[in-house]
Length: 337
Image 1 (cartoon, rainbow, N blue to C red):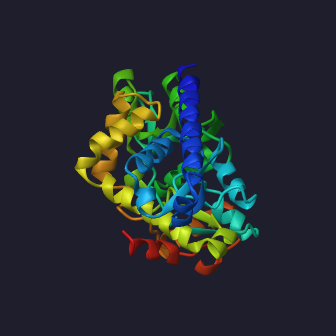
Image 2 (cartoon, rainbow, N blue to C red):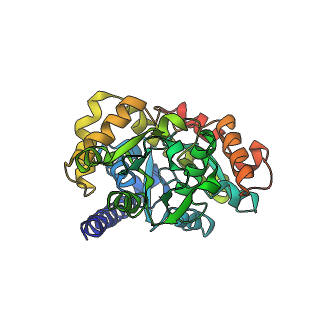
Image 3 (cartoon, rainbow, N blue to C red):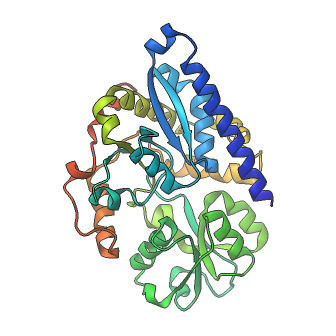
């Protein structure tokens, strides 16, 4: 119940931000003429909304000459659908692991950059005899839907640790927050969940597996890609470049210790409150620098992800980079930062 209420609070706040952005966009012909309008889609997760709060509060979009229209959806998959359905132009901080397989099937979307570069997840367990990934063999692991993000990440981690995925029984329990609750309640033996759960885990008798910190074990996995519609790239390229520049400025700001107060205020406004999880999230950002102060990604990281998809049967082949991405937008954005 508490998680549901927190989600409702965050969604109401996102709606308020979306309404404020709409009013700002219509606040006069002179101002509207100066700012490039861009429809940015967001699925409203806690960290995503924290960044939405932060970028608005720090004025990075305004300074980049962007008038943002916030498009709110309920799930990562819906961010992609909003682009394909021409309800949005770009998604920056709501990753969806189905982007590349959908592009292979003809979806008019391209990868244009990245936000989080590595998974902000750890594998938790409450079982005293499960201390490493190898101990998962023969056990139950909580995930979301088959071949959605949590499942793919666990398959990738098992493969990296030479553990046969066929020896693991995966159970769909929902989001990573619901996976954590299922692990805590003993409904599954282990499962991946957010780094913000680390303080609560220690207090509740859970542990992170010794080789279960995905940000280090799967450091090459491009966790949160930014992607835009082909139409927006063609018709509003400058607006997209400036949007990526604004997010790049925010990522660079977050790389500084001076951003703590602003980050805390944004996360509190997002509905999280000043709970222990915010300190864990900030410690993760400061220690691992997952945003790297840049909205860019690379061909090598995208080819890694494609090869992984091929091995899992999610893609038929590794496509040429120009077929799946336009990385020039993020490069141009870096010139504006």
